[in-house]
Image (cartoon, rainbow, N blue to C red):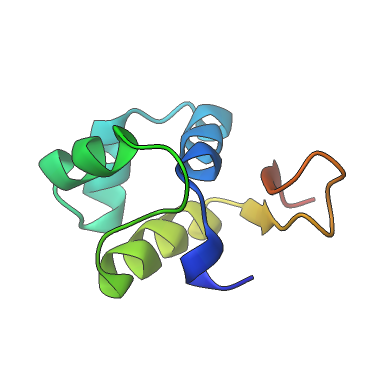
Length: 83
């Protein structure tokens, strides 16, 4: 799955699985809290710079999050913990 198709809902769901706040994600990804908060005010695809999306995704995947695309989940893109 490419970085461009990550959605805000997937980011929020991943944070929920990890019981992370926006501050936790900011600290672990190296992306500022105001940027995380701004990105999460929208819905739809994760916006912002590609480097920001890579940092967010990497931080979440390092904790066992797996991003699923619509081909893997009938309801559309989602997230899961890696087994």
